[in-house]
Image (cartoon, one colour):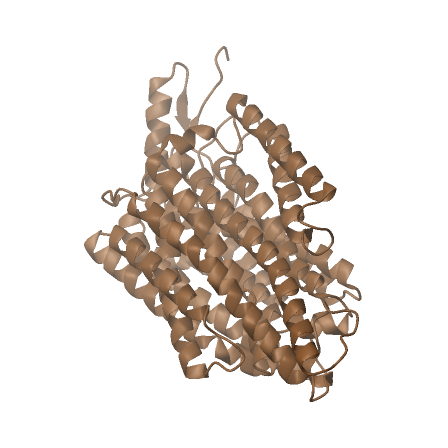
Amino acid sequence: MQSASETEPGHAPGPMNDKQILQAMSGLMAGMFVAILAGTVVANALPRIIADLGASQSSYTWVVTAELLAMTATVPLWGKLSDLYNQKMLLQLSLSLFIVGSLVAGLSHDVGLLIFSRVVQGIGAGGLTALAQVVMAAIIPPRRLGKYAGIFGAVFAVGTVAGPLIGGVLVDTSWLGWRWCFFIGVPFALLGIILLQRTLKLPTVRREVTIDYLGAFLIVAGVCALLIWTSLAGNSFDWASWQTAALTLTGAALLLAAVFVEARAKDPVIPLSIFRNRTVTLTTVASLFVGVAMFAGTVFLSQYFQIALGKSPTVAGLMSLPMIGGLLVSSTVAGQLISRTGRWKGYLVGGGVTMTVGLALLSTIGADTHFGLLSLYMAILGIGVGMLMQNLVLAAQNDVPAQDLGTATSVLSFFRSLGGTVGVSVLGAILANRVASEMTKGLGAAGIAPEGGGHAVPDMTQLPDALRPIVENAYGVATGDLFLISAPFAVVALIVVLFIKEKPLKTTSGMERRLAEAEAEAGAESGAGVEFAKDGPGDEGTGGAPVADKEPAGR
């Protein structure tokens, strides 16, 4: 199988100016915006959706987890494909899957179909997560990447702020309703596909490759087995049960088999050799624990706002502004300073410390926490996440050969999503059990006999006045406990970051480095040549690029 190229024959590419980079990023930003919007617009609607469909707290967690699980399991595959095939086509395919998932979700009439649609969305999100950062590294040198990462941070912040607000308004508008939370992202996804076709021009090294389908299957199956276990344990069956043993042993066996296959494959999905790079290994471990700490606590904040604090979906969306503001300011400022000075490790360490402090402070919240204090805690957490998350990717991309940019980036995204998915699943089970125990305690103290269905998400608009304070207190206490459990994972991430060695940021883009590496390989191999190719009529790029055509021995 051979990858396609998008270059115009005739001359090698030079560095892109700011206007060209912004034009190329326009489709990427639209794609990332729709991915963020799809997640955040649903956040405030979920309590209403689950109550409307008559589902349980376990289903609430599954609606979140299903997308994360599908995204996590497919990120390495998208990353590998980005090293081999047309990245623009893969991005457009990701957005198309997102559109299909969104339409099915909006038409769902039971929680099973809704969860399935979230899986389809997750597969599309896996492509966007892996490919957006790969393409940025391809067109922007690491030394300049911080500035543009700040622009992406702004898109992230706008999508995250707009999502809950739009979702709240849609849910609170009777003639629209929660289904439009899924439909609203479709036009943005279509816009992203069009902009990518018009603006993104990438040279791709032509390589003769074989896809390691067995390794891909074993990785996806092993990860899914473990994630399904963490999602169901504590709700559908006990942590210590035969189901736990079956799922964990199956997952471990599949992943061990994947390691065996990947070590011997000609073109592995995740080359094990990449972990010989100290920076990649450390940033991967740090990303895993950042995912646990960040996703696990924050995904349940909207539920806390609406149930523990008794706010409407619209108000709950506004209440998340301090955290998003902190993330926007820190990611933008840190990106500008990194581009100006070339120094980046201090921001990783500072982000790790700040994120840990923010989680520790949020562990003290309850149903009676003043919003001013809550805002401060959320802003501190946002500042820490903004300094840490994107710069871990920058550190890894700066220290690998250009031909491994897709793999390295997807490995970091994979482990961050894996940590988030496991964290959401485990803490979702903890939240459900903690709420149930607090409800039993509160009902007993009030002399009210507990009823069945203690794991169902309550509809606060239908609760009698006598039950409201009991439910609010239960969710307040349980949410604070989730942040307390998340904080140690942030501490581990901070410790790992301390061991990352700071290296000077490169001043050439991944695209330029990739073509230079291809020319060097072509010149070193007997019978290898350099050829030019292009994607097709109308795909003229900003400059032609040589493409190494590596022939196997004997041809």
